[in-house]
View 1: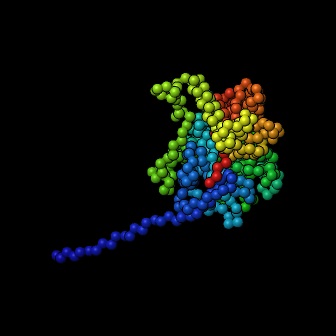
View 2: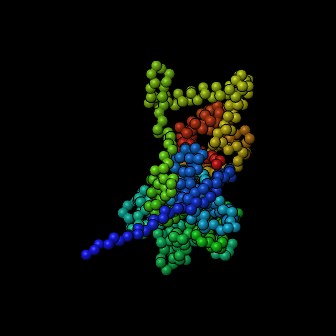
View 3: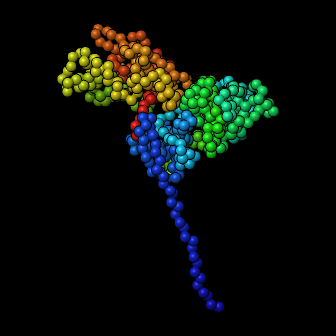
Length: 453
């Protein structure tokens, strides 16, 4: 028997080359940056690229937004979403934009669910024993076996008409329904309104002006392949807390555990910008810092909070006095009036100071960056040119506090509490209320800033 050699041809393995595409990302001041990205890049990857290129500190609040100016809508592009897929749904004639900015409320419902799900808006499909905490509500949202039901009145824009109608709505895992008979939840009275699978949830930016909505708390379902404004399913709540509850619940029901994974593992990208290729930038929190005393022969940690605060205030005052002298005539001390004027104007270079913006604009900026406790900005008062206003968020509401100038022995001070606590300048005031609640509903935590790319 003769043996013959047989040639075996192995299949050729062709490497998959991902196509690249140039995308343009805008910041709040309308500056933009072009990025060449692979087709599988996620929203989180784009944020990470911009954070690294601009040397920003990554505190997990940076977010990519889809902005549709022709219909006045905007939405968060979830961290795991493919950016190129989002762009593929844009029409050729549409002037849509990607925006890069902070949103402190993106995952806030995982930290403080009590602010997002008011008791009067939540019920359950099965009977529950005793009261259910907000944390348990969140766990039920993430479970595939049970579901909470969000319910309440919303204004709905009638299809093909300019009029709006107040209707009772119910949000379930299978979709959004409305009742044809008052607040009845009987199956025969429920009519299907929209699902989540083939639609995205958007927030209306100017509902009253753009769509004739009864209030500026609008949101809508937009099908992925929408042919025009007629395909939009417009809704409007009567207050911000209600809108936030509906939108948050829809996000949770649409993405489920994926949102929780985005929150818990912010560096797990799908493209080359994953945690393996990019070392996360450190974010310094107030909990990682300690007060130190270097005045003696040996340094020591100041453990007494009162002593630490007094040392910080003294150090700040000393630094500011030096700064005011430097800002005089190139090192020569100036007159006390000039020094006082310099002290009063030193805040203008701070990222939290927004100069002459209106109350409405201040509220828009805070809402944009998230209604989280302690989000704030300082601005000039429109009603009184000599005063300033601290605008801040607390319990999903925006509050405004007037900062009044007071004079004592020829020196000017700033105060929020009728002169009981005085500050030589706005920087000292802001730093104090970042450490102390004082007369405010909570400490100042995150400042609103317009960043440039």
